[in-house]
Every structure is written in C-alpha cells, then in structure tokens.
Length: 230
Image (cartoon, rainbow, N blue to C red; front, side, top):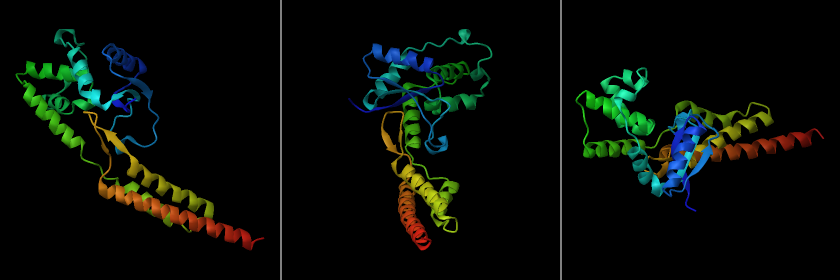
C-alpha cells in the first residue's frame, strides 16, 4: 500500500470522520490518526491544536481537495451573524485566500464570497497563481531557532556536571540533531520535503557527532572513577 500522508487536520474526531466517509465513497484510500506531539509546533509549521489527522496517498491530494471544495455551497444568508470570519477586514479575508492551507474549506469558500460582496473576485487563473506562490513559500526550509541551536551545541560541553548528568545532556544534543536531520513536512500538493535547511541539517549532524563522542568520553571517565574506588 502507498504511504499515507496527512491531508487534513481537525479539532475533533467527528470532523475527521465526516471527511473520511466522503473520501471512502469516492474510493480514495484513507486512514485516521490521532497525532502524538513530540516537539513544539514552530519546527514543522503546523497547527497542532488540530491533532486529528486524515491521511491519504500523496497522489490523491489534488483529487481529494477538488472533491471537498466541490461539496461546499456557501450562502451568506445562512451564516451565523456572529461567525468570526464576518468581522474580518478585507486584508484579513485576502490572507485567508492566500493561506488557504491554514483554513478549513468552508472558511476559504466563505472568504471568497465575502470578498465578492465587496467587489473583489478572483479568476481560476489568479487562484492557481496564488496557490503556486503559496506552495513555493511553504517549500522554503526552516532554520533552527537560536535557542535550540545553543542548547544543541552547548549540551555536550557541560563536562563540569557529574557524569550521569553530563551524559543525559549529551543525549539532548543528539536528539535535536537527529530531529533536524530527519524531519520532513508534507506540502498541500502531497509532496514531501526536508523541514530544515541544508545548513541546519549539517549543524544537526555535528550535534549528533559531538553528542556521541561526549557520551563515550563520559562513560569512560565514569568507569575509571569506579575502578579507582574499588
């Protein structure tokens, strides 16, 4: 079976179940998964308040996205008067269109309707250009924040701590290094790319190497101290 990637994220399992049923009706392979968090959301650029994942093969992303959008029929008269999108400014509504991957399909369709009401409309070609531009933006790899770089590099240098503690800190650097080396993100079109830049991945490699070297040194010192006290 082809690898399944996160297609949509939802706040509740019930919301995910509705989409799963629709995709199954159209013979799109689908799987539900509740995400377990390991690192802060800033590293992968996702909204982890939405932990209920609908996963499908990458090759079905465009078909599934078109299917979901075709099922949405927005009528401004039926929208609750206190719905949060109604209070958005014109620029904020345009932001919803540009960053549609961060919003639900209903909000995207409603934003288009609200802009049309203001005399602002988008042709299919313009929407395609916005989508391509957004994809290019999301394709840019991230750099690790300065604080985590500092932790990753300095953790192997804490030799002044007792041996067991210095070994623990060395593993922090190894974990951070492995994380930036291995983490990938899924783009809206289903493609998978490295989440971090080549420079950051190379820094991760040196975090792993220095962490392993320190671990070996620490344990050798530990065993020598143990022998000297026997």
